[in-house]
Image (tube, rainbow, N blue to C red; front, side, top):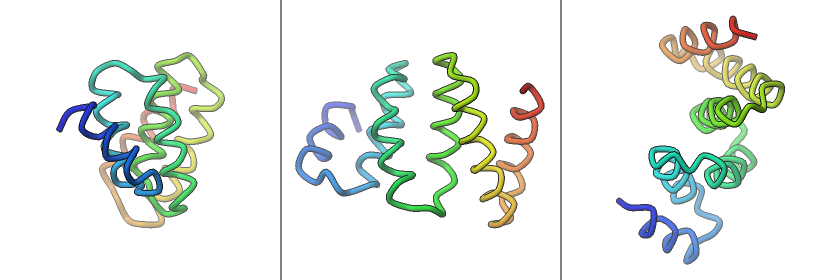
Length: 100
């Protein structure tokens, strides 16, 4: 789906975190990183156990040069990866965090 379609869905159902997550992913894919941030923020605010938006938020903040903010989100994502036994994301996050 396109950015326009997800933008419409978010406008129709602003509390639907899945639409926001999908819009954020589409924006990131289109290199519209700054625009993705508020949607990722809403996702992490809605669900404390959702690891992937935290990873994407951390990576997006890294791209924007906001390293200290990124580190916080990546560390939270790592804790969730460990807690939820997601080995691949755990390895990826540990590698990213070694750069700090």
